[in-house]
Length: 311
Image (cartoon, rainbow, N blue to C red; front, side, top):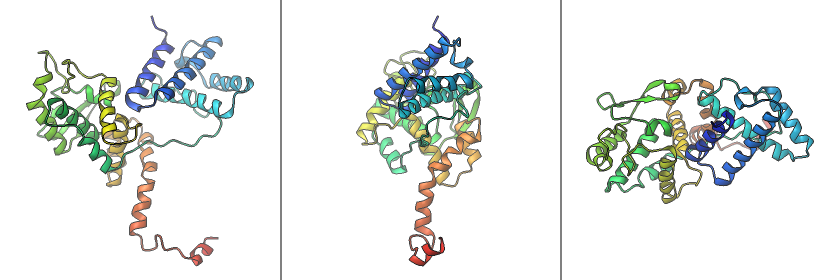
């Protein structure tokens, strides 16, 4: 039986590849760092990430400094450890984060990557909807951006999840928690078009309940969907790091730009804590600056006297 720490690393690496869209080199670095931390824990009598405590992390950093690693390397290894605990907390596989309040080399905070509304539209319009596969792919991408679903939630949707009359979709999130998410009419339209004209092309098994089916007639895996999206990202000329999670971040950020309430966004995303959703307020700062510069009577017209008054 696979040890718990190995199971956690494998699940985290799958997430990095399928949802975060990180490069092979970055994923390999995470893999090495986490094996290094797991080996340290086992040497000190702790057999699982989930059993580690804050002192274990502090001792690990002490070991890294003692063997003379650069500050940047120590910071990277600590980041790897922080990230797997964030993942384990999100997946509700642990309820503690031993990296919390552990000081390390200062690192700039990385904000979620988002696409502009124009870039999102370019991506959604890339699949050839004249073909069954293209229509299916367009429906998946459109629904992902229109609802902010996690990719695991998207590929887990079954045909009974869609309520076309109420324009809602019933989503089963982490921990089996269900929530209702509104769906824009344009997204519903393309999903319905796929279901009525193209889904039968993929429905090779009479018992298939998933809305979206692969060429083999089975529900998509995370990696399978990511590989499809990766191709369209390249065709649309978008950054290589664009991933399914990028569309989730973009959905939330664009809602915030439009004046949506933060708690409403929290409910739609299925975040257990408002503090997670508040990340998007920081992403929105550049947008707010543009709005201010375009509309405020004093924006962009500061004089030398204005600067003197600030001193």
